[in-house]
Length: 344
Image (cartoon, rainbow, N blue to C red):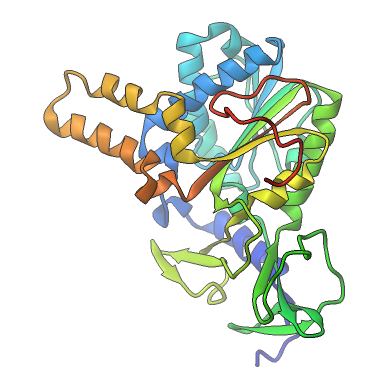
């Protein structure tokens, strides 16, 4: 026992990740898609341009990113927009949702000279100014704090952190979560209240003004359950409860619950990251970049495309889901009919 009162898991996770991102370089522990290849940002830059046209080419519009890391994705997108869609680039007002002062400075350097207007920073998505908006969030939802509930014969208990272990206590309040799922006794059901709040706020915002949001993350789309909490420290898996603030804590995203929370908006997907990027021309872009390169460089370019999209690498585990204002055309890469906020 720890000698102190047990702490609810979501509060522990929020505290640990706040300390981690404030004091450590997360990119020493993991590599995100924008850091693997410029192609990821270029493909999504083209996605932004097409989505902007589908919104009626608003000028100005907010081009926002939540969890922008080193600023690599936004830098690659704006470079592409300046080259192939200058009207969109000039209309874009770049806003970043980032709480870490250290990462804000890294992003400022990455975006120097890349944007038509100065970049603005915010602590939360709901602080973004009103107006037409395109929002992108790559590996953002997975770091939001989760709650875990255990199915018992008498109902539900909730997992708390007690030292470096878990303890299940009677659940005093049940948040919005898919508690109607047929979870076997003894199994864990996760929910992420902050992610569901993001979906609700975006749906409300997109009912007032045109908007499109793209979320890419690892997760699942279905009535599943189980413990997905994980930690990375020094690039290796670690026990999530040890040494809070020294490891990156994440959990898989429940895209079905996320889409359901966006009721009133149009939800497209989820689709796999591999299907999205392939549909947007990733492999054609890779061949274009590899052409006339030395064999070692050409191989590295093609391998990066495979790493992003191959089913046995990032292509299947990572999913993409788009939320749009009702009545807007389906965003590029999403051929299915909108879910309308319902789980599929």
